Image 1 (cartoon, rainbow, N blue to C red):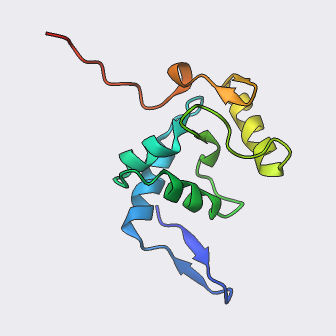
Image 2 (tube, rainbow, N blue to C red; image 1 turned 90 degrees about the horizontal axis):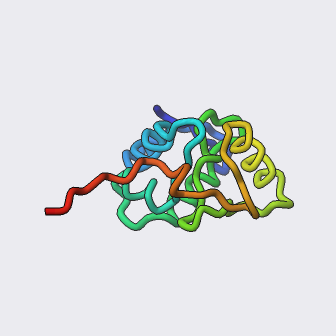
Length: 123
């Protein structure tokens, strides 16, 4: 899934960064009605503790992207975008449309978090 971007001169180029490609692949895998934190998304994409990098790259997505950017929240399950900002309103609307319950701009990560925690057996 290659994402084309526009540089400052207006020329379109293809984002060939394999780290971004890995991020877009993981982001695309988040199912409707589920959410993921920036940090978990970074780890799954092989970016280690790159939660802030994930946030920066998500902020650079074009307006017409089909990637589910709205399914990414902070580690406490809070919507990071301001409630009075159009993108923050769009994120909340999209999540509600997918059946995600939002209370005080927060989502229950235990209920809606993705991926499911790996079950461990105690010995």
